[in-house]
Image 1 (cartoon, one colour):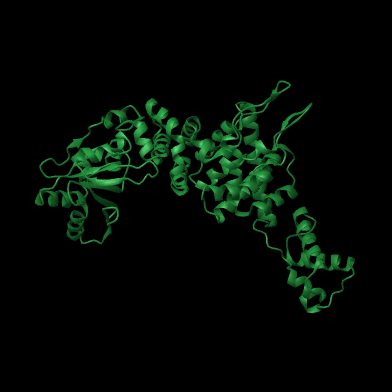
Image 2 (cartoon, rainbow, N blue to C red):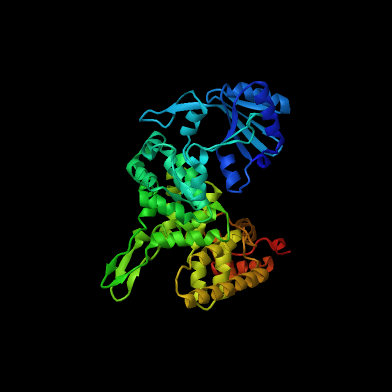
Length: 472
């Protein structure tokens, strides 16, 4: 254990613990991650005494700034590559209407009992007499070995006291590929409605961590099976289920979405691209129709889904900025490359896709590849081969026509100056005609070709060139 405590901050803490005759421990995630062989730059230190006073001594010895949070009884410093937080050992009690605990001074045993999970209740002594000694009262090491998320005390009480711990249980299971203990699962089902007293920001923070885990479907399956997802994100649970008419059914869009999400995690850690995977079919329940002789359809689900994105982001307190617009764009366009991959690929269709997707075209292609979830190996191979053809075509057309992030070679101001007219309907008509002509390949994407085209179209609607120097 001492091999994991070689950072100079530990020797300073140990020396001061001995000097002040204080019992001091590293506790929580840092200790857990030692046994998981995961790097950790955040260290929680618990002191049987005044945590802030001890932190001030450590900061003075290290000659670094200390941030003190008196309301929480904590202090934090940064030294070299790590962040260290200090707190006095405490015990907690809760009121039914709040997840904010009533805090009292306590023992190490009290402090370990208040921890959310056994794997986070592990402690290592930093006092020089017992330096490196592991304190594991709830067999957290055994739970790490068995890959199990379990609470130190009664899980029903643990989750009722602080309902956010239900989300944290799911998050750790998803991040670590652990199972949640059966009694803990039942306790989450029993207490699921308590999640409503937790702020949306805290819920969404945990949800994003689940989405960023190596296999997010683990977390979403737990959220669904316990009923938490029905409360925090009902639009996603609406995807669940298969309906049959005349013996014809459709795929379960909930589990399809989870497969797409897992697929895309192989290629990207981008949170917003993963959100696009979650929301790409979100409007299928609202657009589901049965057509006799054909089967189930979801016509327009990409348009309806794109319109749903801002409302969902608002509901979940996700940022309403360029990240939201990125997700909205990918939901809107996610069928386009698939359609291209199925048909003969025309330059015009490729130019339009490049025009609409812009710099997000690679992300869009990644989403579309992840959207292939059929178990038919022939279909998978065919789709992937076709996607490669589409990507090559995108590259070839862009190199030649330069329509990605396209800016019109002739602007509205140019048109007004050329014909000596004011802003109005004619300007808009000609601008649209220029864009369509370039996207269809009728004219080159150059200023010279666009000016000649503008003069021709202006003449057709009775306009006359008045700015001869404009042609130079």
